[in-house]
Amino acid sequence: MAASRALDFMFGWIVDPIMLGDYPETMKSLVASRLPKFTKEQSKLIKGSIDFLGANYYTAMYAEDDSDSYNVDQTYSTDSKVKLTSEKDGIPIGEPTSSSWLYAYPKGIEDFTMYIKTKYNNPATYITENGVADQNLDLTLINSLNDTLRIKYHQQHLSHLLVAINAGADVRGYYAWSFLDDFEWDAGYTIRFGLVYIDYKNVLRRYKKESAKWFQKFLQKKNIIGNNSSSFIL
Image (cartoon, rainbow, N blue to C red; front, side, top):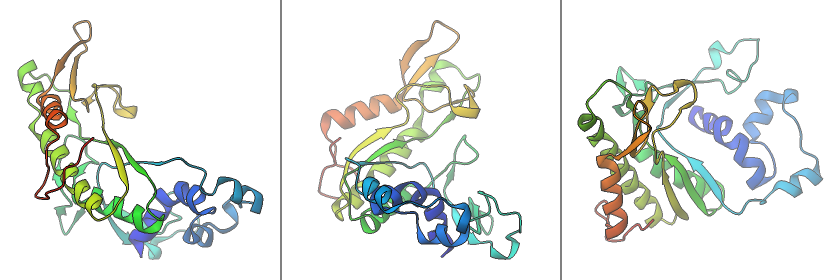
């Protein structure tokens, strides 16, 4: 139930109105009068108004009921009555990465797309972001380009995405985040998500990382990923 509420507050808050015409029932119940209400005309206008659903996936977390510590000072961060953690009994949910919040949990992308399929009547879906970062450390260029964790991350996530597709999820595309190293929100230039390395100190020269070469071969050969006999072609 805690996991369901967490999904409602983090994903359903946006997707339920455009797919179902209203906010999730859990939000309406817990947020009550502080949550805006749609008129019948507004609900009719936005319901089913998309051409496709774009969803980002990077990692997953454990959800634990936090009703007991729910304080009177109701806020956005406490309304769901859920505590989210990246570990359980001291064991991380997945392989640690350079980002403190991002543990590699490939099965999560399969679960996520199947959740979309089941709850929202299987809309045309694009994975608009999926990727993993490296720390922008003072490594040699050769070491910076040898991003084996990123290759493993994308290969495993695509494999699980293929499982969901073969189970009927209408996933039509996948975007790796990101093509180039970039400025990342509050992390700035301290981390690198790119398949292509940007040399910030030398006129922004670009170098393909090993992950870019792997992705190129994957696209050119239309590889079969995972153990399934069906190919997933981007």
